Every structure is written in structure tokens, then in C-alpha cells.
Image (tube, rainbow, N blue to C red; front, side, top):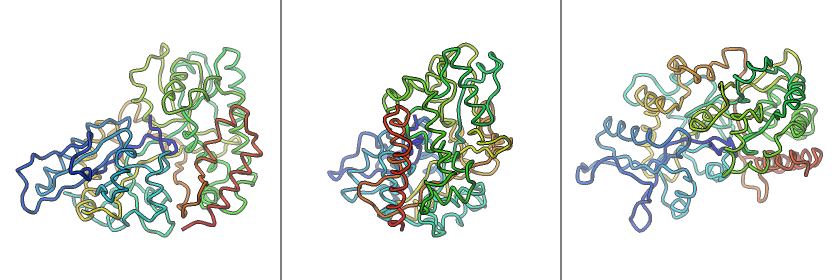
Length: 451
């Protein structure tokens, strides 16, 4: 699972990072060094790279390390690739030992990236965009798709400076069994009104309309809904804690729609909506016990070995429009690569980041189904990935971004307040009025603490 970004994030984050040796001089169990000891030249540098092991697997990072070492014989890459990356590297960082490169998404429950953002602990990498991709003639900015470095997810202080670079991206939406819809002759809903009608129809066949892995997966769903309800300006207002934004009719429409989903949710969802059991909720879609779930393209690989109903075929649709003919959005979730401001080898780290966008690196990542936001990449896709990534070519609008960074506010987290209470909304333990009030109150406190 991409137990993400408070996610997505919950999202399954995949990224490159480096972990230094423990203070005693030993290496963590997940650390590997590609070049053998004894072959180092006097000017060789060790680049510490740490990576979250997500649904894309760990092998691709070993191959990336080897290929970068082959490109620069004076660099040895030491990898730490762990599923619980934050738990592994946090103690060393607290002791003053930092990786040189970190690939880890913001918005995750563990909030390591978010904490460093709030503490101004990331190196500014705006200059990397103008650097040539390692071994190539084009710059990073020339290879990146438009829009990916113009969001609060890469420019967290809204000051025009880049501190995190975009890596693997994935369209998100509502995933379903296209084979079941074909079998039943059901139309995939385009509006929320059609969604409720389908929910009543499916209930007669003892199929629930909706489920979700964990409440954090609502981050991209809510983001798409905010865009659909009020457009880009409204979304940006919510992300920058505009006064009264969560009390507007646009925000109320989004919250009321989520609340209504509780009437159509599979009864086992909230019990399984945790990091240990989330795949049980995803399995509900594969077993035709629930129609839709919010997710990203990684779910295909994540559930690749899971049993499924006969004639099962993955489908993904954008979030329904609020009215006929209204705009529909599919949020784009992407991992981020960054350099701690306390890193020791910043120059080499920046070169390594440029290498991430090389054709050579992209080819390695693609074999693991990790897709980067670089020009021409979708032309190399096939099968289901080609279908998923072409969603933006079929009239669906892309949505991306995240909440603006603020100074730490004790006891206040927009992720916990907005997404963390959704289980209680779905179970009826929390009223939408109290939920909306708590979101606005959290927004007010964070607005005062914006950097």
C-alpha cells in the first residue's frame, strides 16, 4: 500500500535517500554499498541515499545506484531502502547524521518530510531545475512536464523557490471492476447524482457503492472534489488557509458529499481502515462486494497476486462532477526528492537528482512501473498503465498541490482534522457540523502560523 501521504497518502511513497552509518560506526540492516571497499580513490565520495520501499519494490534502487556509480566512478552510493523508512532514519537524523538525498513524500502520517519543511530543514534546489540532466544536454526543467514545479508540494513556502523535486507520479481516482459494469450493463456515473442512483441499484444486489483503504486516501479525493466544486482559485484558497474558506458553499458541498457516502459504504470498511488491514478493503472491489474505492495506479501491482472475481478488469474514473457537464478532476499524486539542509555532500546530491530525470534512470524506473513526470514518458506505456495515464487526454482535468507549510502549531494538524476524522463521519459518530467547525478552526490557527 502506499500508506501515504497522510495518505495517499496516503501513497505509497517511493523515493531515493541515504542513510549514514549509525553513530557507533556500523550500518543499519537495510544499508548496502554498491562498490567494494578497497577500490576507492582518494577523492571518492560516498553519497547516502535513502528510499521508501513502496509498491514499486526495492530492486530498482539497487540498479539506480549501480548505474549512477558507473556514470561517476568517484561516487559510491550507499542505500537504505526500507518500508518503515522514517523509523529507520529519524534516530540518526536526530543525532545529527543525515542522508544526502531523500526521496520521501510529504503528507505521510509519520510526517518526517513535513516536519523538516516546517523547521526549514530542506536545501533550496531551485538551481537544480536549470542544471543539465546528468549525462545529457537538456536541463531538468526542459524535461519535466509543465506544472509539476509550480505547486505547494514542491514550493512549500509559496515564495517561488523549489525545495522538493517531483518524482514518480500517479493519476488517482475511483477504481472499480470494469468487467462487472460490462456484465451488468451499468453505466459508469459522471455526476454525483448518477452515483447515488447506482448505489441504490447495486444495493439491491447486495453490493456496496463505496469503500476506502484508510481515511488518508481521501486526500486526493477531497482535493479533486475541491477543484470540481470551486475551481483552481478556490482550491488554492483552501490550501493557504483563507479565512472562512471551509464555511463556504463550495466546501460545504464537498463535506456533505463525503458524509453522504457513509450511507453507501461497505459495513466492514472502517474496521479494516488501518495500515495492517487496508488490503481487505481493496479486496472488496476485487470480490465485487464494493464498486468504488479511491486509490492510485500503484494498487494494480499492490493487489497483483490477490484473488479476484471472474472477468475482473481494472477501471479508473475521475471524481464525479457536481452537476451535468461540470468539470471532472483526477488528482495527480507524486513522490518528492529532496536534500536535507544538513547533508554533507550537497553538490553530488544535486547531480544525483538531475540523474533521476535521465533517460537511463527513467528506463530503470519504468520497468518497475514507476512513472516520472517527464516529456514523452506516456508514449512508452502500454496496457493498463497506458489507459490510466491517458485519463488527462480524455477531458479530465489534472489536480495537484497540498497545504502550505506553516510553523509548527502544537496539537494542530490539517491532515488529522480533515482526513483523520473521516472514519468517525462514516460510522456516524461525528456530525458533519462538528467536523466542518473543527476544520475551519484548524485552518484559522495554521493561517496565523504560515511561513
